[in-house]
Image (cartoon, rainbow, N blue to C red; front, side, top):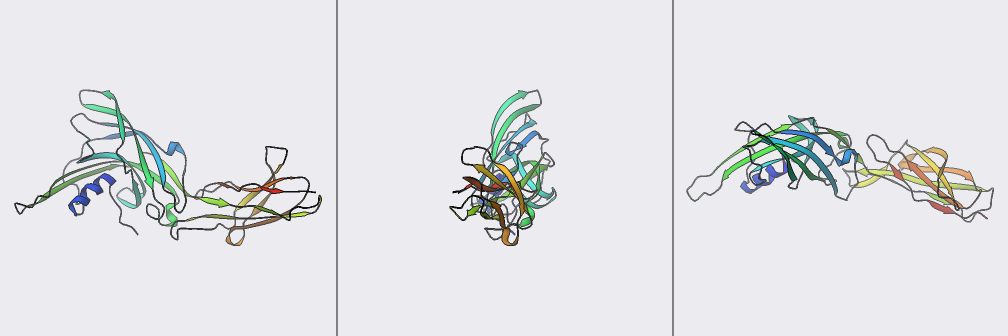
Length: 277
């Protein structure tokens, strides 16, 4: 299991020192994170290789005497799985957010912020349990470091806080689906066999593996039509295999459609054309 970071910005700052973060040493400011939206409210679907960029928007209210400069002082959004005090996994925003001040008082400053969380399959996600509903937290981090050892002295202090349950978001395994109708050409009224396979991302192996015992709809679209209709529902077998038969009636396209599950995204096969004589 990879080592968990506690705030990407904090991690980057500490990396410069080559030291690990101790427990917080000072009282943290009272930040308020509200209106947090991750991935526009939609599930995050991740495959085995492609990096996924997840947009995040939120409102941040801070004390007016606290400066967030993203050099020594940071604030942002984090996704976490498990308890806030003991993550099973977490993913931080890795860019500097764009914030626009929307309101000020004598004691507070409120800003509308947007940021990006980058998800790397096999790094950010590395086990089956990561395909679940994640919590959202607002985080604050500050570091003071003097690493000039010319006087035979160095010093550093850190401060970290997190505010949990600011929202929830699903992270799902990406799915792939295929379809092949044969023989072709085929005489009208003869039997057509439609095969296919449903697979989904395995973040541990970095490959797509068969998804068994799952329903997939077999659909047909006539050559002269733009609309698919469901013919029947087929259940995946060993290695996610699909196979069924239908009678040939007219030229058109067959495809399989998988609606998805709580842990796996939806998938639709490309339509496979059948020539009926």
